[in-house]
Length: 384
Length: 232
Image (tube, rainbow over all chains, first blue to last red; front, side, top):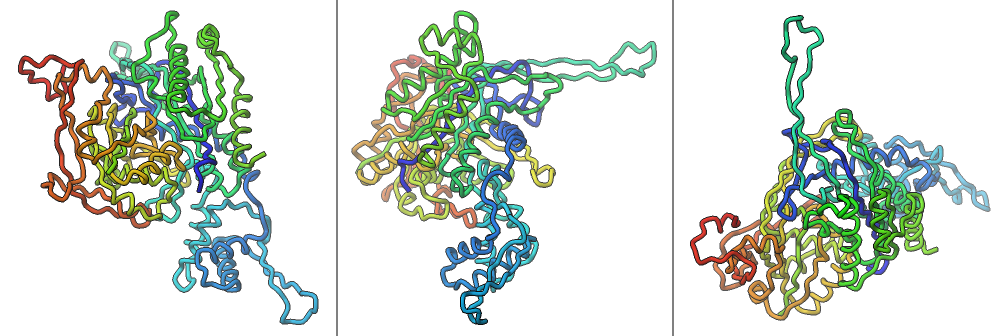
């Protein structure tokens, strides 16, 4: 394993969210953290990952990716031999056939005559009854079950579990941890940080009264009263994808490239849905920077350890964008590193003006931003 | 003997040593198992690969800025069934900065430092959602861990330094040497990260205080009872 083919895609997002409570704890307060000595709004990584995952699932047709094949038996048999070199070909093929059939995938055995047509020279060809799309992890799970089963015995439910439990693209990206079946664990290829506000945040309480429509005429009281805690913030969100790991998890470089494309979009455009009917707080990011790096993924949250103060025009996001770019540049200069590519999208007009005045405007549209990152990833992975 | 110095800082870190099931605790100082895991990830070792060589290195940490405990309440839904999973509580150390020290042969440490600068797997501070806020490697110093703990400059934020006395004391914790009396036994030496059979052994640690001068600090000509509570 070499370090030189490292391909990390870092996504940095600045996003302003109006009064909202998109991610709360068990007491109903918006989540928070302390950073740089002051309270920050926080949206947990699991909340944003779930939102990303929902968008991702809707936008990606899995059946287009990975491999469809009739020759699953041979693939699994080969994997069984890798895991257990003592097995000969015939035994491993039989075992693979058995595990596939048990998992619910039908296998047809065709007798193939070889040239001289005598019985000793018929080779059996195992094919599934139809083209099946399986990810590498699913093949792995089935092979491991078969190879490790005592006396080659396993139940139907175990085989089905191996198949169902195993990796889709979504699992390859986001990983999976199943406490009672650690053999199905997949290490995630993406890493998502908790989003935190770039400035100090103060929670506010909305005191509400609700009227009972069927209260008697002379009743001036409310049906119920309560409070909703909320805050508003400009969030710094960060995620990174390990493209090499992703292609290993998926067993396909092309699929990995497609997944990177879908993930970048989904991460930028998603938002957790907590209390969205109360606050209608869905916004789009004002600033996005994507870097493809060959050294190490670099979280730039340090730019905001000193809370951001609004710039002369009163813009927090524009001030944060400038600090983020300056911090990124200073870090790369100090460590003598540089990203393979570096692309920004600026959707916030004030930030655009600000960056132009500093001669740092190279803003492009979302499609171009994504395709720039995806092409750089493709050329590193596939080497075109 | 040389010592590799790493800076561990970011908004959130999580260093569990007894975390099980739905309550995921953290210690207030980085754990050896966490840092060994980070080194193994940088080198591209898988969870099932042996790590004795890394776990055998002497390890120490110094608390530059204590930070505070952050509790995260987490709900989860099983995608496949739509059923709620058990509620979990995850604890983090927020807003903290630490130095981690790894003592060993300088060639070996050069290799580790190179791997961290260009890691095979993305690195994190104890939990995947905690990417480091810095580039980690501060350098390789001559001398052993005790020397490095005493001589490494203080790396807290200026804001925090201003709240501390002129003579600041930094908590440190390191693997006990052969002549040390150990202060605590921690189950924190990774034997195997294999998810099927995770295993940790015990290590003896020595805790202590390292004095640093703090020109920015609060003058301490008077007795200040608030000092121990982190200053005013």
